[in-house]
Length: 315
Image (cartoon, rainbow, N blue to C red; front, side, top):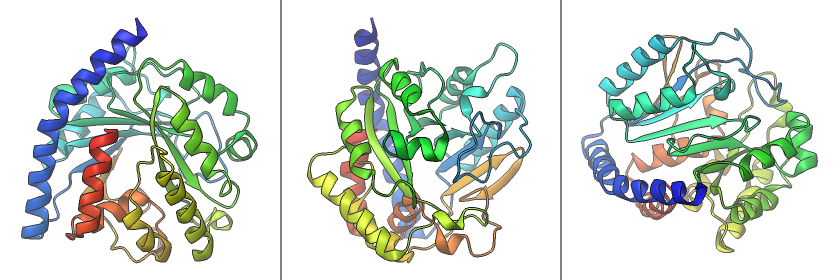
């Protein structure tokens, strides 16, 4: 039954690829040629409530409010009207979201019905993963058992159990590299390659929010990490990042903020990220996708070609 469901989802994904590709190609051309700054990627924060207190996180349980279904639908409609077609649901922990009988699945289905081309979910992986309707489930795994648990508490074995029991192969490991787990890049890559429900792994560098600066990497450490990621890509690891963006990430010499990305949290719309108003934070951004997108929409040809190969393979 599970294998049959995965085949159906894979077939649907192949059909959607072409229409999505054509839309994104048109958007990219208009953005590059006309120097437009319209958004294409949007994130809706469904709650900041979380069951974990991770060492590198600065945005969990500030209010612990779970936003209601109708409000989130209005926010999705606003993003769609702005031109957003790649949607992320984020927390807190997204699988904690409920409104009466409605669950996260209802939000994903509603987003699909509205016309979003890609609907993705970010999770810490501590809840059962039964969400085949999502295009990607970005699941936080921060290294091997020892390093991951040092950051997130004793959750590593629970997460891997949930990954193995997931009902679709739409998981992408999502690792923020910091001083604790910088030596576990290869471990996460090998796991992603081995587990049938995991499609890829995506890396970020730790962005040093005021209360987590000690976890940030130096330029030399970033360079060593990028070299390791590149080696894993060359060895066949399913890495969802672009090697051509690595030099810009190491030096933090990519333009910020990314105007093509927006975040909606409780009615407040922010460009690029939730904490863009923190002085100096943009200049120390560690998000790989921000570098990749801003360079892409500035017309960088290497980024464009590598993104085409990578996205068509893993989405």
